[in-house]
Image (cartoon, rainbow, N blue to C red; front, side):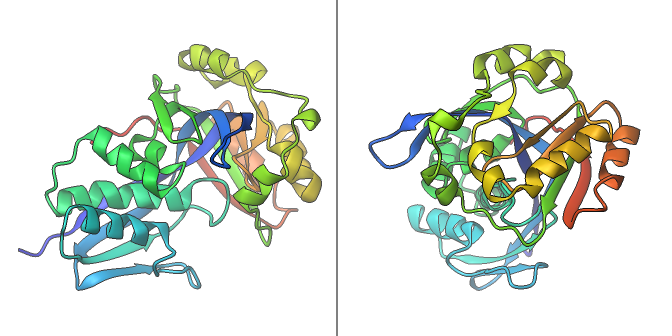
Length: 288
């Protein structure tokens, strides 16, 4: 019987990002608080021939280098399933933005194909497969609020952060390589080191209580290379945000606001910048 499965792929922001050191495998040891937001892609899975991926974003590769494609190949090969799927990525998450759009799509494909092919894989197995694809993919299996450790693949779920209004803004025409950002990280430049365990402890109290403990050490790399990120942060704060910070390796900046009206004011204040903007909220953990 013909069938179609739809999965929602949420973007993420980092409420705190700390680097502990360099690992022997070349990756950096991190300690992060990751948080899903309502900005989302919609991933559709339906019968097809082989693995075919299409998208609404012109120029976005849909071939073997696409993380969603890699997720389909991994499941098909690991469980000896003949690939027979057409995957449609209806993207709204900004591209190459530090919002885990590609990772979230890959996680959605793992969840969706688990159902589509009736593999009946449990959470721990899906997360282990996700870790083979990339550091952010295991978090994106469930999303919500979580600590991410190791290179990001060790995920410890936390109670959901109370719903918080969020504005995300990505400068157009700026591409930031995650590998470049980590390679150029220098601990001596860090002034504001986030307090990850305090963030986790205060999470149920709401995001205003998190502000004293928040921070992203990668700002020390990306902002000097792209100063507009700092200007966007200032504009967000002047428009009413009670906190603004770069997400991941950037270049996206997010702002936290007390309500939807202030969030829209913040978004409206960014028209002088060449940015993609979304007004959204945080979202909780996805049960599968």
